[in-house]
Length: 488
Image (tube, rainbow, N blue to C red; front, side, top):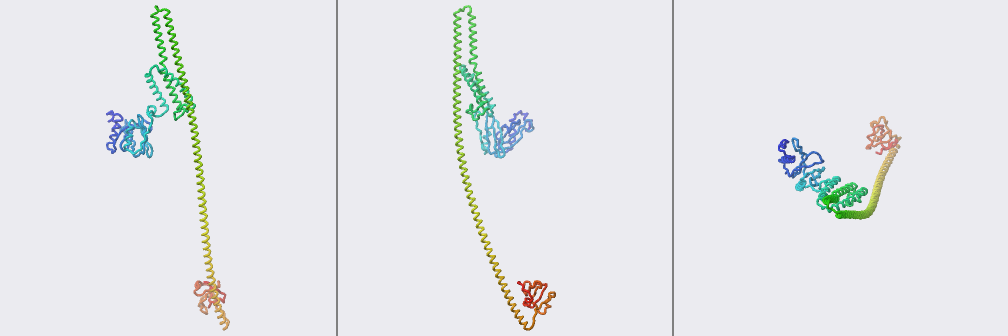
């Protein structure tokens, strides 16, 4: 939709925005429910419009002199928000949408109730409406700013004062003026007292500050001053007027009857004027006494209220002190109970730790016992193995000894038989010529010239011995030559 079309049709901004949005929803599956002008975020010179449909809302920025009047800024689905807080006033409604990432503050003009109904009918958001007293919706009180409320109260009081001045009879003006002056005097005193001790002059207010005292009592002082000024015409203007009229009448009467007046008539008129003056003075004295009496009663009433307030404050202090003592006693009992519980918990933990350490000690002792037992068994097995090895070695040595004895006996037998035939010397070849074929006898015993150990056929080192070989015809020859038999 172009700028030229709307200029030619001379439509309002709202009509332009509505037409554009309706055209934008022509091909959309969402159902357009309403369009409203809104304020978005902080106050600025930009103009925004909001379209509400059954699935969510679109936020548009309006630019009247642009080629395209409306620009879509953001689209919000109802499912994007978990809740909304609504603050309704007379001219606008503030919607605070609570989202998963951050909140959105949108101020909707005029149609706040309708938007609330749409949200309730087409979304699952939790709707919370801010409840305020009726007076907070009045112009001047909506922002809850002190100076704005002060100015609004003063203006409304002046308007009400003019209305009352026109409606109330003149006979009540003097009383209202006296009461206003009395309240004015008490308000001035209260202002000075309140600037020192705010809680003495603000018994019904939750917030008791010097700022509240200043605004409240300045309002009372100005209001009473305006009332006193407005209602002073009841006495001050009427008396001079009547006096002037009576004077003019008297002058006219004297002028008209100057020639025919006598001295007796003048005396009567003088007495009458003196009597009127006396009555007027008496009336003023009575009014002054009434004012002073009213002032005295007001002061007595203020003194009574002050004494009552002090008594209430004293009672409140005593009650607060008693509550504080009770709270302290409760906290002390709670602290003792917590300390006792902590002590018991520490003892329990100590017992558990001791039991754990005892169990670990027993386990270590058991493991040590088992290890000692195992070592003893291993030692016993080792000793048994060594004993068996020693027995085997002893048996082997015994067998070798027997074999040596047997060989020695055989050698002795052979030697004896040889000696009987003549002198015998065992054959011993030259180690440098260690071939068995050089022996005069077929020797089977192989000896080592260096180690003096001989080996028999089938022995472990028989075939390994290759150098320094000395051949013997028999073991007896080897033993006779000073060789010993290999153990393997």
